Image 1 (cartoon, rainbow, N blue to C red):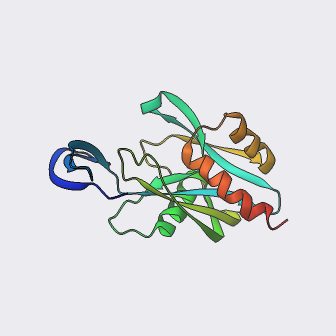
Image 2: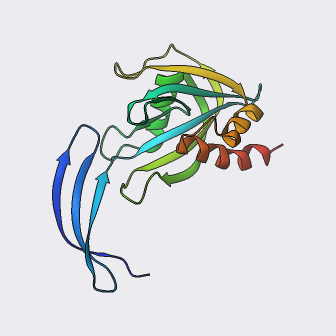
Image 3: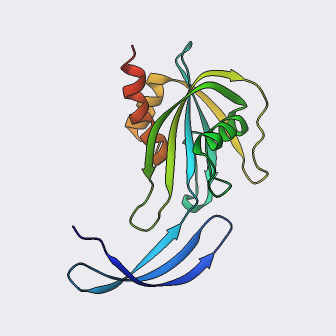
Length: 182
């Protein structure tokens, strides 16, 4: 399929986290239409897994856009243009769980909602965990840490208790890595 060709951009909004533009595009069949695009700096998400105990560490966080407290993996946006996703993952793991990891496995990335956003989340599995500090989240970020067994975590994903896409993607990608080693 041929790509759509941009004919022009109108910048609509520029905020703290996102930018929004409206593009006029021409489709491969010659039809002209518009595309509204949310630009996001990207993020890193981490599944902390304790190999010795088989425990997974998640966080709960109220998400205003959906009006719910969600159970999800620690994650955060790339704060600086060009920031290394691994450095972001290390920072977010420490801030949201108080843990560090001696080993990180990169499990690729996902596009969260490619129909209207370019947000790309890099996925990491954190291994060889060590509790090194208390939580130190941003002042506008209230999280609680939830510890659970690997099998229970997978059950929560399968049953719909966990609805966060990055967490579900990490469960799927980590499963092959972790269970392939057993």
